[in-house]
Image 1 (tube, one colour):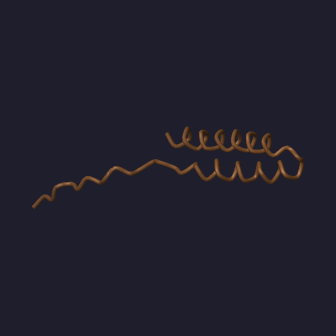
Image 2 (cartoon, helix red, strand yellow):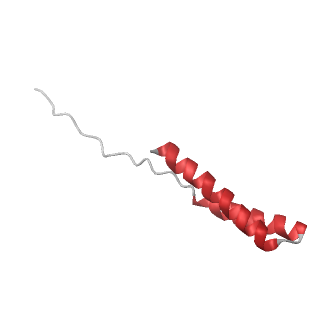
Image 3 (cartoon, helix red, strand yellow):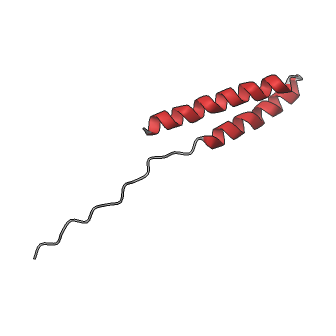
Length: 61
């Protein structure tokens, strides 16, 4: 007797990169407080976090 092949459910290839955006903002706040430029620190940390999140997303595609 031949058993039918069971199809596997599709595997999710989504990787979470949002944590890097949050860590970038928090790190930017801390660096900004240390240098006296909180706004610039937040913006730079946000930019770095977004770049890292996009790289993770792009790698997972």
